Each structure stands twice: as C-alpha cells, then as structure tokens.
Image (cartoon, rainbow, N blue to C red; front, side):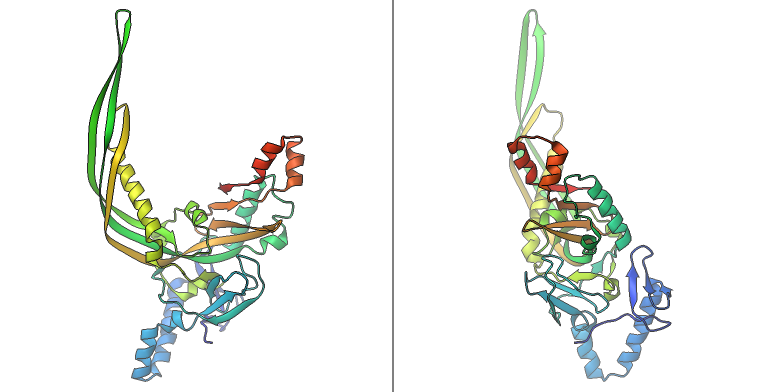
Length: 359
C-alpha cells in the first residue's frame, strides 16, 4: 500500500506540521519550512515524477487523484468500527473512541477529497495545558483523570465537516398585543389591543457547519463552534502530518436535515426580531424555504480525549483552533462525598448523572 511521506528538503527525513508556528519541521535535522517552501518542493517532485510517466498513465493518475485516494492509509477499529485516515508519519496506537489497541490498516476508500482545511492552531503541549486547567475547575473528577498515562491519549484529529451556503425566503405571522394600564379617578383600567402581525424577508447563510461523522457526538461538535473560517486553506495531505483524520461516513444529504433545521430556526428568529413595539408576540405560522444550497467538504481540527470510568466511555473535545472545550464529565463518588460531606441521596443521584460542560 502506497502512502505519502513529506520529506525534509535538506536531509530527507519526515516533516511534521507544527500548529504553533504553522510551519513544517524535520525532527532529524531541525530544519523548518514554510507552507510556500513545502508546496514548491512537492510540486517540483510531482513534476519530476509525472515527466517519467506516459501520457496514458498520467491521465489515469490525475483522474484518481492519487495524493488522497491512493497515497493515504485507512484504519478500521475491530472493536467499534470507527474509520480514520492518516499518513504513515502518525502512529495509530489505539482507537480514540473505544481505546481498542488493535487497528488494521487498509486502503482508503474515500469518495471525495476535502476541498478545504483549517490547520491546527494549538499543538499538543498547549492543548494539554488548556485541558488540565479546565479540569482543575472540576473538583469531582476521578483522581487519575489527568494522569500522564491518560493525557497521552489526547489525540489531534481532523474531523470531517460539511459547510453549507444557501439563500432563504421566509415569512412569519402571528398575534401581537399592546397593553396599556391607566387610572381614572379611583379606577384602574387595563386596555389590551390585538394585532395580526406578519413579516417576510430574504437572507443568505454562509458556512453553516455539520459534522459528517457518525462516531462524533453532534452536540459536542456543535458546542465547539464557532470556527474562524477565514483560516480555511486549500487541502493538502501535508497538514495531516503528525495528526489523524477521519473520513466522513455521512454525506451532505445525510446531514442536510440537521443543517436545514438550524437555518430555518435562525431565519425565523431574524424575522421575529423585526416585530417590535408590542407587549407580547405569539408566532402562529412560520414558513422558510431554502434555495441555491451548496455544500463544501472540509476538515476541521479537534483535540479528542476519551476516558473509561466504571464501564462507561466519556468523550471530550477541544476546538483545535480556538481552544474551546466540551465534554461529559465522570464523577468520583468518593471525591464527591468528601467534597460535599453529608448530602441527601436524591441530590447526590442527580449530581452523579454528570452533564455537558464547556469552557
């Protein structure tokens, strides 16, 4: 199976993308290269390679887009079925969903190459520091939650996302009231007037995201938003160097319902906000139509951490660009008892359920 390895221009060692500098570094000779230098070197190598190929072979190569479709490595977890993809500079020592250590490499079977990617802005050291500081604010966590052995499982993953652009037409209609209270003599009056209200409008929506992974928690991925899409850059396999990347298993049609609900809700809110000057408003009818819908397949950076506690797996995620964190926290019964002292069984049962937290 053929894989891509981005070689150091000076010594030929593998290059690794560094989130803090946004450059590529060789760990052997410590050379550092910019994006322009890496792309120029790759293009030169590609040109030299193509010059040795026949016209028929070159055409076949272009059609298949071997950089992504044939030069990548796919992994399937035998335990939970998660599928991830990376180049051969990344060591896949465990499944980041279920911790299963048995991972079998196979040929990547992706249908599409991502169009854009947001490179990691937080490296492992900064991500770990942020995660530990976040955990310090959670006194009920198990004692070994942030142990070195656990933090080693913090994994940088490029998660597949679909970004939707569309235009929308919408209308809302309902009943509004104006209430006036006044006094005449010794009598206090309340006057209520009723109005039929209606609003119509058009709006454009850009880069509405939806993750394309069945394994990722949709609620978690939503909480990690927003990303700064000004950092989107043309996709290159070189950005995967040192990280994992998951292939989407839900296409744009699978996630469209989720996205359309978000757009319809936001369009309805925009129209509702234009109804002002009333004491109360009750929307009775809403209709939003989407048109000119277009979806772009991109990869977005996420640091993922999983923790197994009392037979359950807890998933945490950090936005690899902004550092925002979300996760469902396990609660140590012993630490909770020490922290709260004597508390009622009912209250303690509620606390034991944990919850979704963000930072």
